Image 1 (cartoon, helix red, strand yellow):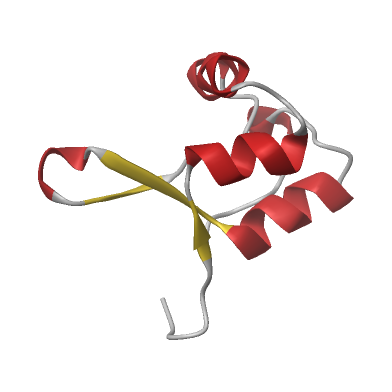
Image 2 (cartoon, helix red, strand yellow):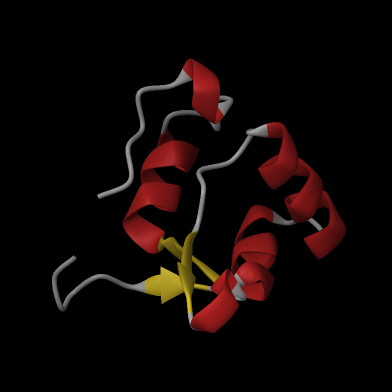
Amino acid sequence: MNDNVKLIDRRQLASKLGISIRTLQRWLSSGKIPKPIYLGSGRRLPRWILSTIDQWIISSCPSVKDSNIERK
């Protein structure tokens, strides 16, 4: 990962998608959204790479398992 990578948290991602954090959790569990990277001990701080989320949105938000989006 380079120094220019912007990470967003659950709250920011839910706001960007116009959904609740609970819906975000369901989408993550079902594989509908790109997986986060985890920061901190115990993998307690999920963060998403903003450019990956933007690419996913541009691709009309396909289920991740049906898309070719990869984490950079």
